[in-house]
Length: 444
Image 1 (cartoon, rainbow, N blue to C red):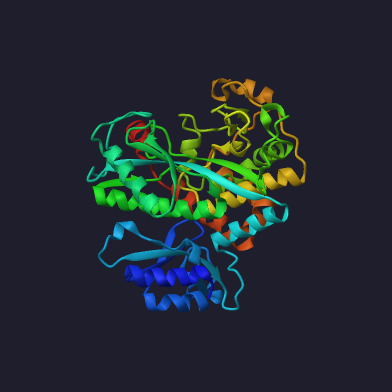
Image 2 (cartoon, one colour):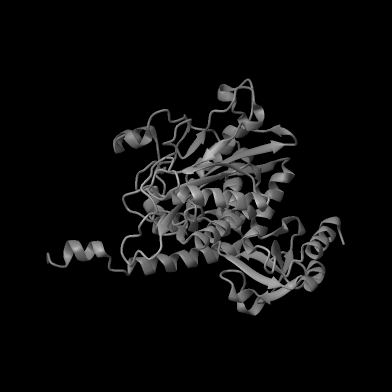
């Protein structure tokens, strides 16, 4: 038994932990959980916990249903919302087949495979997400959801629900060992943002799944409803998850070059070029719901065109300003991903696209220095600014022909995502909406 496993067992005994939840996600990114008794943890470390993988969305076929969940002791944390009554802890799991092979459709394994590719090239991948979400009042009926407030960007609302909510959520995250950099009210009524401090991509993906759970638990505690739906209100901003990224070679930031324009290295330029070239084909994973494309094409600063720029918030990929000479903070920001994405798959694809740019030495096009939203369609065409997919259907078609996505996700996850999203779009297309009834029912 290694030191981390021994630490977990001692902590369980010393803290009187009654239940240990083993967490993992399905392919869509829904958190799954099984609780085991403390006496079973040592055996789980040694042999894993068996379960029916065919009952979990996209994990395995019926004829290959047996899977094992192996808890990762480095992810052990006491869950603060459980309090002192029956203290409960959690660990994230890696999934394997009975013969010990990694489960090909485990989203965590998809990311770990991609991170291993980066490591072979000498890189470590770090991310820092800005997570937006809405808070709504409970009991608003079946009509339009009612936000908890009507505040705006950076507004201070003394005694307001959102202020208390963020304070409680941040405290809970820090109790779980997740460092928070900023928290504030966002642009929409009832919309909030909490930014997590930089971490390696695997840790951050685990942190994001924990973050969503914390936000939901605090919402229940405070009698409100929290949602990461990309566009819950038609006339208000959507919820994105702008993600800052950097590659490190040992202790050196691979995106930094003091002698280059804007201190952006050749590696950084090629990484951005990879993100841009493959952005349409990875969109289905970064923006996985019908509703996601209402955020991308609904205005309110969501990126709709494949561009990059320095400090240009209308661009899909942005190179933020940072303190001069502070090489460790050199980074790029991808503004296309929304808050409902599966972070394991999304980070794997963004990293894979960037690595492809480095490996193939993609040339970076000219930066967009103007406001892309303010340009006319003919001006954008003249500048060569391609559009992101405008619908889930278009995103499906673009991903279907992508070798990069198929290679990164693996055949089983690739096929499942496509099948699942085709089904979602068919359900959406068959609906008769309120807008159709309003504009057509009494007219024809």
